[in-house]
Length: 230
Length: 272
Image 1 (cartoon, chains in turn yellow, green):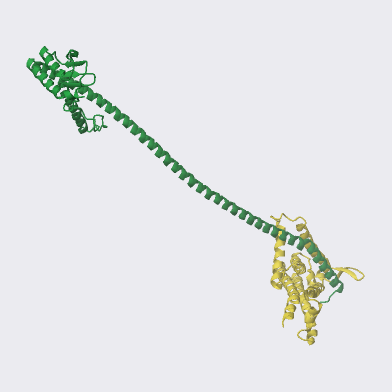
Image 2 (image 1 turned 180 degrees about the vertical axis):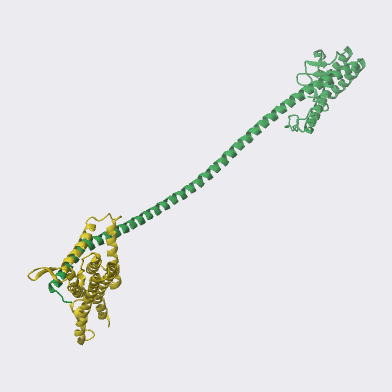
């Protein structure tokens, strides 16, 4: 896995254009952990008055996400919760599993972070157009003048790229530094770096989710307020 | 720093699958559970508010009942007090009536006893007085005194002849046996009234004290010491009543104290 730590997209198994690498493999692991944990808790929910402890933990997480979404978007969090919550839980779980020996975070692959950023890039018009309509949504790229269209498009693309590179750089650097320290320094230093990587990973997950929410909220509110100006 | 486009596409698909699965197994059930719990809490609050309102209504109802009971209690107490006061007044009235009746009976008994005592004393007093007077008069009685007595009676008889109609069957009562001349003198006086002398009878009456009494069917003329003794008896009754009153014993007015029912005296002796 040493090579996988440096480039997790290297194929482990290949059949034509289809191949399996560490990024996809550990992504499935993360997905399995999230889905199985949720299913095991919610398949037999506790009584209404006394939910189980694991259900309470999930309710705390979900409620915290709702509050964060409401604070950022100033809107009801119901429609944004699945997308933003999944982004946060996936990135955070991928970072938390870094304490497992031999684990390679999927978010240390640029393909994964670019895929997540692309999802955000697609989600912005998907949330914005139902709020504003096609004309009002796409007209905001012409604001304040039609000459700003290229700059607005570049802005959209650059922020998506920044989103992907920021997450990739932080997670990849953590994995890279950990692999290098493991080869050069005593074991306890690698443990310290892993713990530090946990904090960094949680912060990056929060940043990614908040920025995604800001982009989506700006597509529904800022444009709307701009349209309402006389 | 290169992007593996197969991995890129696979991660997009993986993310969308994860989103769908978490929406199915995490957000949906958790949000549903939270919503149900909130709804249950809201319903419990509503139920609590309804129960509180019902309890408040019950409390007000009970308060009204307590107020009503308090009012009823006051009314019952007032009625009971009034009833007790009325009963007390009735019992007091009955007690007063009983006391008055008892006092009346006691006074009646006392008057009766006093009257009996007075009569007894009078009887004894009169007997003593009579014995004394009889003794004195007996000692003084002689021919001269009897003659004086007859003379005085004849004069009285002559003064009252006009009111003494003629009648048959005249009886002359005397405390002592009249001599023949004395019978003759009285007979002569009666003759002036038209009475037949042969119809005059002379009798002796021990109850007369040194006296003579002429009686027809309807009229009587008498002169004797019994009248003086009657006066003495009346005076004794007055003195006895005054003595009892002065001793603190309040007695009802006895028949003898009623005005117009005075004791007969010697001056008021009846000539009928």
